[in-house]
Image 1: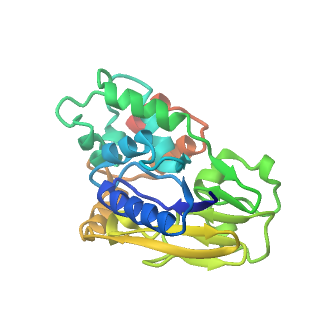
Image 2: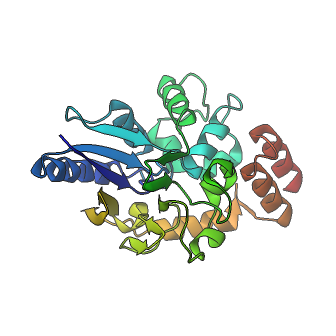
Length: 275
């Protein structure tokens, strides 16, 4: 039996949409008498209401015999793992940044990471995820790649965080890149050199999967209720950390943490000094 590849974009805690989309994928593959290889381009955590449920489904794996799941790590998954492994207490900045995720793990009462067996199990799972999957025709990755740099030499930072240098590139790449990370609207975007599948599920209520059947690319979408308060919450988060206006020093500290120049403990110290 042949295998069809399905690539799912940023889920961000929308376990409800993931459940719908997996049913659509199973039905599509069954109708074509094919196995389904489901590649997830990362960002399972944060923003939506049920990050816990999303990771549980990934760990459980596919329901149909012969199908496979291949989840990749996104930048939000990476930040959460790094924040949750540096100490017992939830850092103040992480408390605000990952509020919906923390709540889905039942941590909103005592503000501690430790002692939560589910969090430890999920953290280990996320930390062990690869950053890319190359099937010879397509390269699957969360954010994209830096043009002009061989695939084997791409940095972790670019694979997780790159935007403009990749998105504005118009020439062919070593592989056609299938990615999420940057919301392109309610519909996926196709270019000769890339396929963008982040349709902002956490706020739009639309989760997209690319169906990669040989050279043909089509799409499946799960459609649910949009979260109309998501943009307001994000704007408030951008403007305030722990109730304080974001200073240049705070921004530099976050940038250094993202670039892996400092760890979570040092980020705590710098944010404290910048307050």
